[in-house]
Image (cartoon, rainbow, N blue to C red; front, side, top):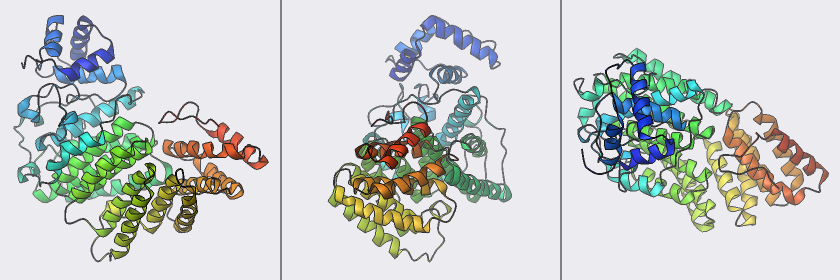
Length: 498
């Protein structure tokens, strides 16, 4: 007992709206449902957890995680509640501080446990039809400051083979969705790696909504596998699978508007990649978190994350990967109206991309960044800058046209984004006829796509149609967009208003 209040638990307790007596009764009831009939919690004990920083023994933290998850409709882990002991998590009681928000980075031996616990709670939310959102995103500067030294060092080799006698590997994780995994061999890992390719292709074609639960379930299973001893080679491959699945789970969560959940998966992916000795993969995972920040209108946070992603990727990062990282940085700069900086960064991206001779194996997670993706990101950056410098719309159209010309591999969501970038650039360039054409191409494609981000971009484009509302074709387009848009607000609180 620290004698200091557990501020994390106190904050979440306030959000939940329970009385201390009510929470005590709920803990006893939930514990009994989970098979712990002997547990007897009272109001004074709840008060000690919150006001005195007392950390209850297992299974109470897991029970509390389940209760808060159900109550708040988003994943709440033991870490979030500030109920991990020093010896297990290597963090301060009360759950984090200004230097280490959300306990980031957590101790190496905690990665598999955090992964398994978080996915189990996420699956529980899915099954019970809860929303799974509502938390705040951690600031990019806070994450960057907390993770800098950790990401720039290599993991201890001991992490490759967890100690089966360690408390982490004997305690049952919160939630009831963890698979009973067992040690695996090369064949099973190959099957898992192929499943990643299938999920990745589906996500690119149809959006993240339809397969998110399957990806989270697969990641949960891999977390269980990582709790066993394997050879160093198998263990590293499993960490690679975990990193790839966590990035996908994060991207799919971002795609359907579960923003805090998405950010957590990107951080899990960075931890998993580092555990597997793949720092470039960790950097790419953090770049996803940066792209999320730009989409949500927080480019300054995105730039903080990109500094960490670029510096922490290590010496083995390929020029093509560095080019991809540059395009994300350029988009953030464009969102802040920094045209000169954006142009320099895009120039560096082009040089890096061209210099990549592909004389070695390209990581599977980079095989989706092709020439058309470079053009698509250049188009997006210029289109974003055009809000500050209308003349940039000409360049946005140029690169969007080049991207669309090469889009032949079934990645429909990227094609929709290119259509919307082109349409927006045409409106800004005072070419409503061409804007109408590309906007309708996007609308036709969006019906079979579950990506909320495409609707967010459509809302941004819709705003630009207001100036041309008196044009008959544009007036019809505006009506069609209003009819097609999902009811309610977009993720950033925007609605389709003129």
